[in-house]
Length: 330
Length: 277
Image (cartoon, rainbow over all chains, first blue to last red; front, top):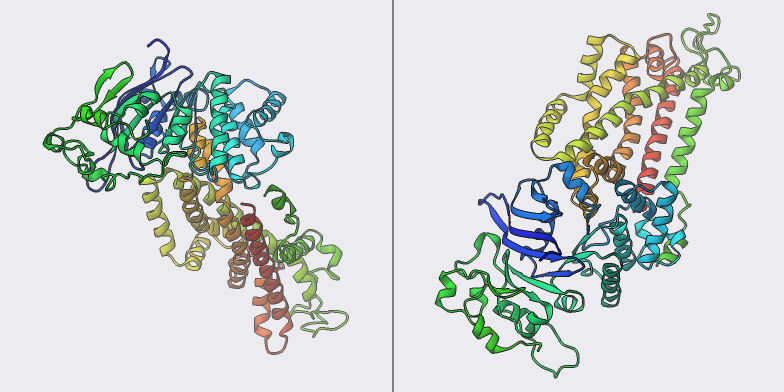
């Protein structure tokens, strides 16, 4: 793949704890291509946010990050502090889940935008002021000139998320890491923000890594997706493929638990049990205690992620049976 | 929502802030231009008018050297306001900056810092200050040094705790994700959000500094006679307490009102800074 911009290989992140190291992300590999939206999907605690933060090395001290993250020919995990700072914000930007806390409450929006412009562009003061206004226009904040001088508490949740996107985009990043950017918003605002991100992707030719637990969001925005469970990727593929023919019992369970508008009134499937804690990941396939397809092999041997074709892979012993059972959303 | 926010009368200042500001403003004016208000020279002795009771000529009476008590109180604002500021400003500045760094660094640095703070706090404050002053020698500058050497730990502890809260919020991570330096994140982003408790404490501390300054003045370790300072005045008057109470009581009122002014200012500031979020 010549147009791959970000290549994550064998990313493994662990945290020290009193009970020994806890591995939150285990042997995760994926690529992100130019102009593509890649979805990382999973329940809370599946390691998707840690994966994102590992790429940017935004983890608390004491976290061990292994593997490689190749970006523009360099391994982000081996860069010096100054080196990673040049990449952060300038080339790769990140937006956060909670628009309520991700903006600095005591600085007006103008300063928060121009600060990023000053750090990562050559614009002079006038240029920065003009660009700040332009950015608020781009993200759809009306009356930009006046709102620039307001503080975050004067913005609604959706407006704050837009402002955060404006700040993240200020330096024309080539990759946007989005950590559940719509989770804290109500659905109508959510839709506007998703469309905004897609428009900006087209306009700026950015790539996007989109972390979410919401399959509806994935269907609406992503080109390809990777499903994570207990720190590992269990299935990858294009969104259309995965939705039409889930190969992993977990993916199938997730798809079955999404309510569908317009469908016959039917029972919503749920996945029994809860995801395992990091300290107690079961032997064999981590999903086996909750899996209706599980057999003896699943309890003893961990299935490797195996390729099913270009861009398609799964880590399941019984993927044929899962495919046979069909997709709950097809 | 945004309209509602703007409609809220953001310009209405809390009453404690207005009251405290007025008192401290008045104190500062007296400190800067005492000669405009004092009817007499504060050092001028008058041996034919010793220990005179309050009268039209001497509203607060005269002391045992025949000096006008009111004039001495007014000129003392200069020294006592100076004590309030200089005995605290270095502790505030150094303590807050160090606390910010320590709180951000966390880990071993913070643990070490905690032990140093414990060690300093273990000594009774006043005893430690008196010990330092007696080594350096009495006088205002040495008192500032002594109070600052001890005082910074309180600011550092308050700020470190607050920075620890702030650094876990998303906007701190967002700053890192933007590629900002640690220095920039600490001082530009975290500290303005974390400094409120330290500022409020500072106001209270200024009131305490005046009391401490007066205590040391009373003990003869602070401002030196014949300089006009409230603690010195109270000490001078204590021997004549039963016959000439005015030379001790009126300086006491000056201490109380100034301390009250700083406390009110602190309360008001706390309210303003809190509602901004």
